[in-house]
Image 1 (spheres, rainbow, N blue to C red):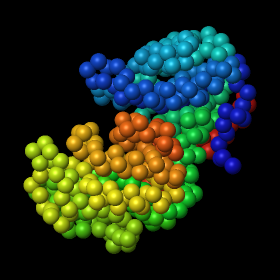
Image 2 (cartoon, rainbow, N blue to C red):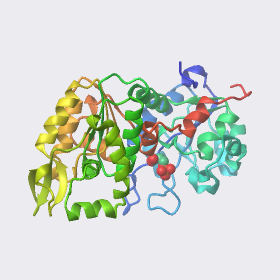
Image 3 (cartoon, helix red, strand yellow):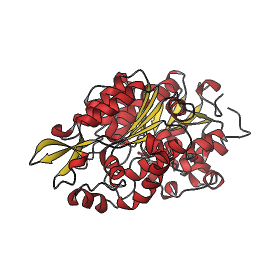
Image 4 (cartoon, helix red, strand yellow):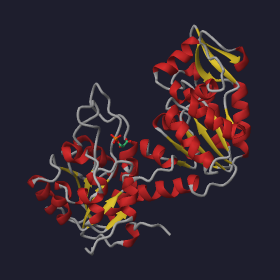
Length: 410
Ligand code: 3PG
């Protein structure tokens, strides 16, 4: 049984429901326009639509970017996108918890939706807080008295112990939204009770995250195999003493990744038979793809992808798996000459009978590019939160929801 309440536990008709969503989207730096509406769509089609249809007065609380960063914007255009997606008017107020916001909340009718201003426009939001501190914050003190129910649907921000994520659960009846529920259930399937053999495909450039996840899932008997690719694969190979060549090693050093080698070595000593590294690579030889086996290294050319032999080996392991988690591409998939490994591995996962879970921005873009969305078991909307979850960390937003207790009744 879920440790948190859901929308099924409350009658929301004509109630003020404060919903924390994660609308944090890719923003085109030149135009400042939202360039991917995936997250807005996910919340719109589930939690927000359901609340509006049930006659709730829905108040949306969300963030976009971080102050000072190019993707930091108001939520006006997010509210417009939401209105278009839902094909209904969506109100927006350029205030988080001041008089304007309060008046807009009080004026809401059942079934109406209001988007508040970027919650990070209030500096208090991002100062990590305990639940008690957050509950006493200006944000919570001002908004909670106007609301009947708090819904946390922002799984993708659940690794942040920010006021809007953990403060309301202490003072308002609280529930997980449909996206939060869906993410937690799918992740539990992959992490808490995976079917075996369970394969983790760890690619991309964030080798530090991949190492932490690999450690956690191997030590805890969650994964039977870890298949490495991308920069992660190169680093795992380098830790076996393979000389990748000056340029490739230089790249790893520049990204401050070579310091991870002792940790990878220790992992390989303990779980060597469960960790797979590339057998061959595709190099960029004057703009053309050229594959070489690992025993032909070092090379003066840049490693751009895994090669066909590696794909064959990994695809065989994937075909026998019952559950698969994939995070990170196998190579520089944005360049058509070098997308072979990423595409072939994602296709192998899509065509396998295993339950598959995919996450991370690049992985999701690649899945979309190759039209494999419908063949994946679950695609997470989260980035950092997913990584932390897979490392076995407790996410403050989820913990707050599980511990939500209040004397207030809806
Ligand atoms: C994310 O996109 O990972 C979340 O929205 C959290 O954003 P943050 O890293 O700026 O806290």
